Length: 257
Image 1 (tube, rainbow, N blue to C red):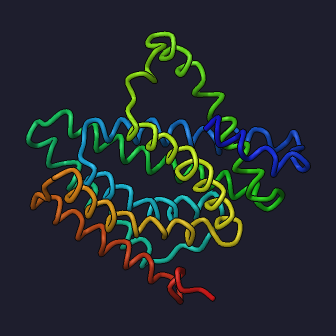
Image 2 (image 1 turned 30 degrees about the horizontal axis):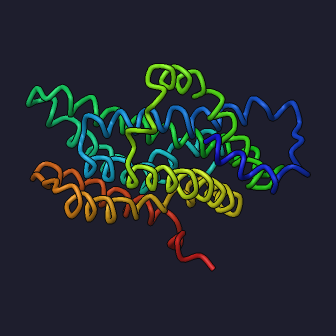
């Protein structure tokens, strides 16, 4: 986050000033979008499967559409309600099976992933409130900067705990860090804020539908993860739910002209 903020600075320095009234909203957008979202996400990956993560996070559009009705006054329909219920049933199924089998680690991981999805929805809603006043790059800059500031105590603690950590990182690890800085932080946040500024929060979140496709593919091919029956059933329920919720609109939001 810190490197992403530094790289963004030359592009936003002329428009970096913001109104004091918007500071609280930007802080909330940052905390939800970086700190809570990433903390719950990595906690989820620690105890659950990458496949589970890709499927559970695909419910983000459902959470967004529901909460957008209350915070952004976007339209609510019966189809959206039914679709949301189906998707939530799928999530409950995925999260609930490990509970029934007394698999505590998997349960904690799945619940953390649900919390990560909810945190990202909070980021969308708070970002949307300020994107009407500021360019996407400005919002991305403050989001990454505040997020880095909040994470800094943990970073300092971990650094002094293991000050020579970089000696233990191989070339593949450094390439992963570089990817995280350039793509997962800098490009991802700027592109997301740019897209969110041009459409509603509900429509923007529909890109999360692509996550299960790539997530399942790479989890199976690169991590050799299995795809248990209960996960397939839960994924089907989530898929049916998001499709039904999507059709609460008159047209497919991803095919807008």
